[in-house]
Length: 475
Image (cartoon, rainbow, N blue to C red; front, side, top):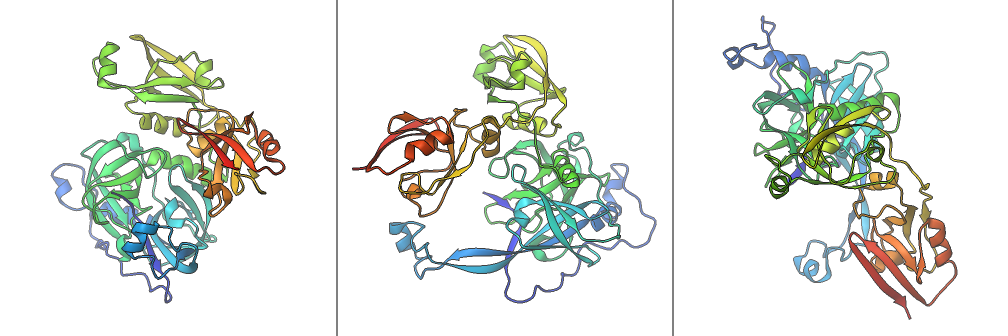
């Protein structure tokens, strides 16, 4: 099971003082970073002394709603009435989320995981020398599960950790993980890079991570994974575990992806990444054999949007993308990652394989167009969609929602209020409303006209993924 690595502590009393630092203090002796295999047995202390001051503890207050019912944990009632039994009764409770972060600019810019500061009201950072500063959230990127904070440090200049090139590391390289596991205080663990380009679902939209066996545990979220040059190569984010503790399988977001979020945090700009406008499929062994390839590699282009930059560059359905800017592409996650690290407004070179012949295409890196405009509408009144929020489907909305239903126009449900009529009728986010009473729905305006007024009987056509649902509501 994948675990994100922050701790949530119930706030009952004022939070205790920061635990004593456990990272060993380096005596003022003449030490240097190991430069050979023999010297590596000496000590990591010079690297720790260099980078540890830029790794901080993060505390975030948040109010959470918890369900209240005398039967909420009773397996008998859960079995027969479901998890929502008694769910209408809630109470507010204060929590403190505990995690780690990395100072990346001396004026107090800090990068951490989004889930560490999610729904937070008050955030503060604590340095390993026990200085404390309040911080504001300036950038949140759900797609990467990263966030950027700005600490109020005045004219003080803080120590920083320089970003390294995460593409330069390889399996077997030595690394250090630094963070605040279980709230015990700043701690350092060592290990190796177990794998690069590791595809792992359920953590962020890219699913592309550095895997390490350096021990990381709850509270390490947002902490640093550093190389032997003292450079930040990843942000520790999750572990695979059966118990919630480290078993030597940890995942870090590569620094080259982290850099794009930091840049947005510096400028205050909204994070916009290049849009390809294609659907793809990984090349299997059988496909590779039929295509005359010596091994499976690359991703097959299954469809191309009419406004895709690949369409203009001459890429065709059936082409296999084998590299981006000279870097080999083995998986769909790798393609998303490579494109996601590039700036909108630039260009990218794609290496292609078309019917056994190699070719190249130079594409423009553009943002996903929001055409038609999304025209958000919260539906009210006496109709089957009351309580649902809908928008016009566009490439921008498809990209934002991560929609993969194979339709690129129409009206899509983005939210459904709990307990609403729409929820009771089973309407779900990412449903595409295609028709009401046999009248086609192409835009939010079409839907508004179709549900205007009252009716005793509604005939609905809804697309959910690859399934088209026709249903009748009412008499």
